[in-house]
Amino acid sequence: MKILEKLLQEASLQPQVGTPAKRAALKAKLSSSGPAKQVANGMKVSEGEDQVIDAVRVTVNGNLVLEDQGRLLVTGDLVVEGNIIHEGFDYSLLFVGGSLKAKNLLVHGEVVVLGDFTVQGVAWTYYNDYSTYADTLTAKLVVSDDREDAIGKVRADHHLVGHSSEIGPELSKLLKKGLVDEEGEWSYTTLAKKLAKQEDLLP
Image 1 (cartoon, rainbow, N blue to C red):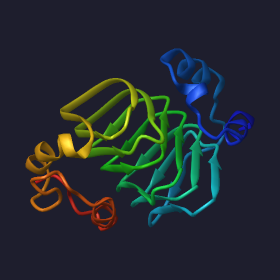
Image 2 (tube, one colour):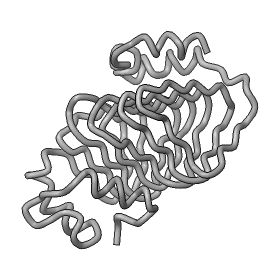
Image 3 (cartoon, helix red, strand yellow):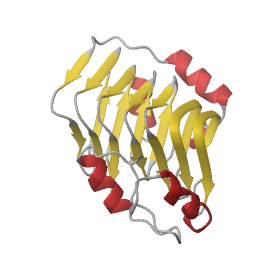
């Protein structure tokens, strides 16, 4: 827990997790002493709130919502049975010391996963203020929209990297009709609302 509390003092975790070696070193120092935890009816990290959970495994029955400046740090595994949604355009942090699983992910802030990172559908990270740090990411569709993510290996049917003006036309073919127009225009807020209702983004 002391390690995670120290991480909360940082404006960004890039210096601590920016390379595979640094992630491995941090993971070796972490230990989960708390019992498994079940969170019913979804979970929200409110604006400006810090939540640090020492548990070998946290299971969220529903969506995990991060508001602006909300930070969630879990020492062990995190299983989100719904979607992970960052509501807003400011900094947020999702740190998982073990593995992370979710249906879909839409994030503007910083994501750190020290174990396996698996998303059933779409893993969509947006804008270049922050990055995603993980050794592997598995999903059907991975989108790094105007963002440079530091992921060692991506396993996906489709992996799109670039500004929305460049990748938008291809995105419009992969997602449900109307989410992205032919010019590549799309709405972060619309996507977040659909995921909040647990609507699928893929046809």
